[in-house]
Length: 228
Image 1: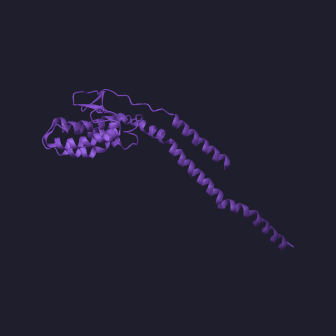
Image 2: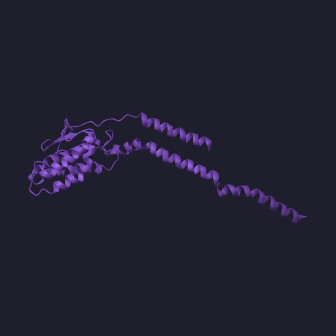
Image 3: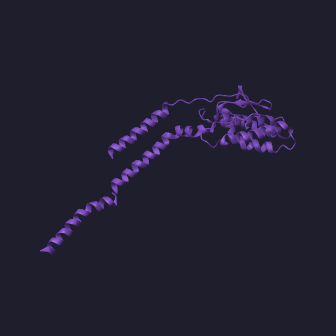
């Protein structure tokens, strides 16, 4: 058991080293293929993390608008479709990890949320509510090292007429690479626990094997006695 234990620990150390030594690769922005819709300026990562927690409030305020507005409708539709493209941001690291294959998609989705808020500030029905929302949102962004007014990336602009679709085939590999140490740790713990249980509670088969020679000796002895 000692050799196997050392092998498991060595494997865990190797995985830990690979994980700490790995470098994240930032996503590459691709300009929209169709720019006939409304422009959606990108936002930085601090703003992404902050605005993600305000999604419910933003969409609820947008739903309160009764007057038809083509731009607002396009922004809301684009945001909902983009969120579905991002697998509803359920994959860990979608918003926070630039190496995630879903991060650029999340950029477009969260940038769309900010664009909706900015539009709501120009609509009479929601101007006051949008102002209060921006105040709370700006406070949250400051805590993430940015602000509502300064979080835009001028070089990256999405568009409501063009969706960002991630490479979903890369998601399993990303998750394995991101959580392989945790997975190896769990498997290693289970292995060590199983090895310990086997040492404390030997299998019945081994007990049976130990008793068989004794039974044969007794059987032979009784036969010998009868023979005499």
